[in-house]
Each structure stands twice: as structure tokens, then as C-alpha cells.
Length: 350
Ligand code: NAX
Image 1 (spheres, rainbow, N blue to C red):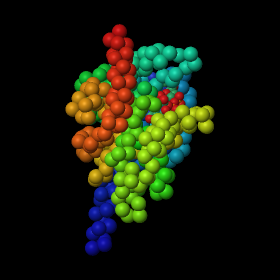
Image 2: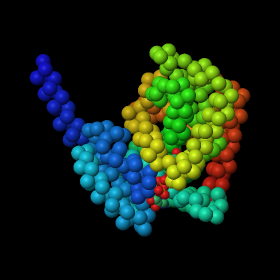
Image 3: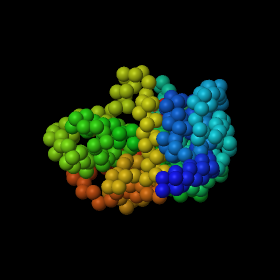
Image 4: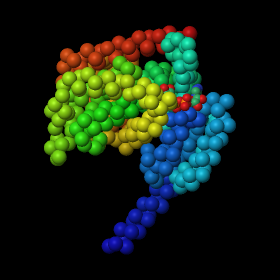
């Protein structure tokens, strides 16, 4: 019996090691988030330990020498599933036949730059990359946008890629989600895996609404509502929310650099959940296309909702009761996104 099982295992290993490699694109690949992210992807943390990968690294021309260094380091990691690494500054190379796109690169805010100018520069980048997705990528490609303003950049990329289903696009709010989870866990003195179903609503900006009305904490084996476990409504409605909203700024202040390790971990969590699905009875936060049918959020936005994922397809968790406190915060972040979208669409049509 043991011999039979062993040989079945060996056959399965051989079959999976012969699996076709998938093509995974990371943009902004010479930047600091990518530097933390690429190793995790290339060793199988995201798409599976037996899934061969071709990694394509896109950055702008001045960063090509830096990309060469990243390629050398990836080679030096000697990772068995990493079949090839392709550094490039050309979208037609980068987006060709890709299965997954992690769009990290964007225009950073420079000193003295107006918010509108920043948005305009990013609309240009995500219009080009959306058009490249449309032209060169597989129609099944899964796209996650990280570069800020992530929600609106994601919307622009999706609108510029009409042949790819809108549902294939999402933006990262998992870092905010993980931050919220961790704050609750620390407050309750449990590990973060004992906290589930926190929600980030809306924009990945300081108007986001971290909500724990539906979250559960496992306290010594007993699943407890987060509000009951914490027993401090003033903290949950005050400092908890502002800590999560301002966490990115706090990290920059302390580190003199923005979040990179935690952002890379969140990207892995986000893409792994798309690929393999969410756990039974659990939901995660993700910026996805708002159809107008969920929680009275206006349509045609990329808005962060609680989602469950099965067969690489997300579904908003509908029907959660929303109180007045939450409603006001969900609407405020939606209003910011509407304004950002309208400005971006003006630029897109120019
Ligand atoms: P870095 O400045 O270290 O790296 C960005 C890289 O993108 C650079 O190498 C740059 O040359 C490249 N790039 C610029 N334009 C490009 C283009 N058109 N095509 C390809 N590459 C291009 O920034 P990093 O710390 O890695 O952050 C990257 C982005 O993530 C920023 O926009 C940042 O604001 C955003 N973040 C988003 C988060 C989220 O939760 N959605 C959290 C982390 C992070 O703040």
C-alpha cells in the first residue's frame, strides 16, 4: 500500500513539475516593494510550490541597470520553479501572453507636485499598460494594481483593456486589511490568525474605513464578536480607525521609506487568494469593480469590499448589516473615489 501511495505521489510530482510555466509580470520591478516581493513569488508562496514560473520584470529605461542586479540576485537564489527571468522596459515584451500582472510601478509624488498633476501622470501610465494588457495579455489574466492612487489607476487600466473582463482587475487594500487584523489581534493578545473578517471599505487612502463590526476573534477556542472581545467602543471608533488609516505615513516617518516588506506580504496574500480561493466562512478586503448593486456604492468605481473567492472569481459578501456610523464612513470614501474618478476620466479623454 505504502509503495503504491509513494509511486502515486512520484507520478503526481512528475506531472506537476512538467506543468506549463505561467508568465507573471511585475512592474516597478526595480523598486523597493518588488525587491521584497519577487523572492516570495519565485519560491512558490503565491502560485504554488510546484508551479513553474517565468518572471517578467518591467521598469522604465533609466532603471534597466538596476533590474540587471535584481535578475542576478534571482538567479543566485537558485530556485527550482523559476524557469526564466525577463527584464524589459518595453510593454509589448512585458505584457505578452501573461497569466498574472502585478502593477506596482507608478509615478511617485515629487516635491511641489499638485495632486492633479500626479493623477494625470498616472492616468497616462495606466492607460498605456491597460492598452498593452488588451493587446498582448491572455484574456484570463488576473491583474492587481498596487501603484497609487491604486483604486483609480486600476479603473483606468480596466477601462483601457475592454477585451478583458472587469472582474479580472483588482487593487490592493490587503495591506490595510492586514494592519487592521493585526491591531485587533495585538489588542486581544492573540495571534493574527485568530482574527477574521475585518473589512476595509473604499479607497486605499486616508478616507478608507477599517470596520470590525463583522469581525470575529478566537478567544481560547470561543469565536467572539470583535466588539465584545475588545470591550472598548471608543478605541474601535477612534484610535483604531485612525491608526490603520495613518499607518503608511507612520511607517514613512519612522523608516524614512514607505512600507515595502508588509506591502509585499499583502500582495502575496491578495494574489494567492485569487489563485487558490479564500478559506471557508472567511472574507478578505479587495478593491474590485463596483456594479452599483452592493451596499449602495455608486457604480463604476474600484471600491474595497469584503469578498470571497472561488475558482479564481470573487464575489462581494452582500447583506451585512450596516449601522449609521459605518454608512457615513462608507459614503465619505466613495465620494472621494467618485471625485478622483471624474478627474481621471477627464484626463483619459484628453
Ligand atoms: P519605488 O519608488 O521604490 O519603486 C517604484 C518603481 O516603479 C521604480 O523602480 C520606478 O522606476 C518604477 N516605475 C515608475 N513608472 C513606471 C512605469 N511606467 N512602468 C514601470 N515601472 C515604473 O516605490 P515602491 O515603494 O516600490 O512603491 C510602489 C508603489 O506602491 C507606489 O505607488 C506606492 O505608493 C504604492 N503602494 C501601494 C500600497 C497599496 O496598498 N496599494 C501600499 C504600499 C505602497 O505605498
